[in-house]
Image 1 (cartoon, rainbow, N blue to C red):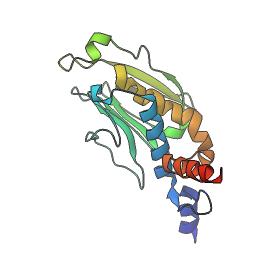
Image 2 (cartoon, rainbow, N blue to C red; image 1 turned 90 degrees about the horizontal axis):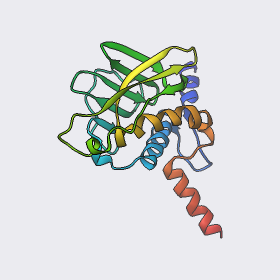
Image 3 (tube, rainbow, N blue to C red; image 1 turned 90 degrees about the vertical axis):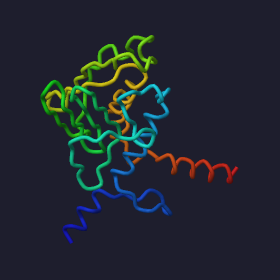
Image 4 (cartoon, helix red, strand yellow; image 1 turned 180 degrees about the vertical axis):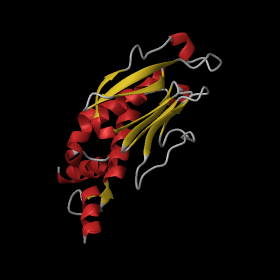
Length: 188
């Protein structure tokens, strides 16, 4: 019985005819859609991967249960980060970092645009900066991210966790939104 109660806390129904969907999958669909719609020129992302758009890099992390990687970056010098449906994990400047994604608060991403002539040149070095995100307790997580078009991935992922995630029960996945629009159109 206790295991069943734990399962119920991580699965939700959405609408009378909607199948059960684990929170990790809802978070994944909504966050990836937000990042994809707010970013552009994915073909110029050199080391950053958005799940469902790019092949994710192999990173030294172990996912927990239904946890999914939303975005990930791996640099040739060994720095990397992965923002999942549960955690922000990073190896930056020789130090490992981890925080619960839902605890992300203030962020400092610096001058994320990068040099315009370099972000589209595949032969130029990858431009990057180190970002800092503080959790609810004020503890920082530092991670290196790619400048330019790819910088929208961590910016929008942070936006999801600080603005959208607190309203998860009220948000629709892209497929739920499409179904809602179809129902509404047939009523009119």
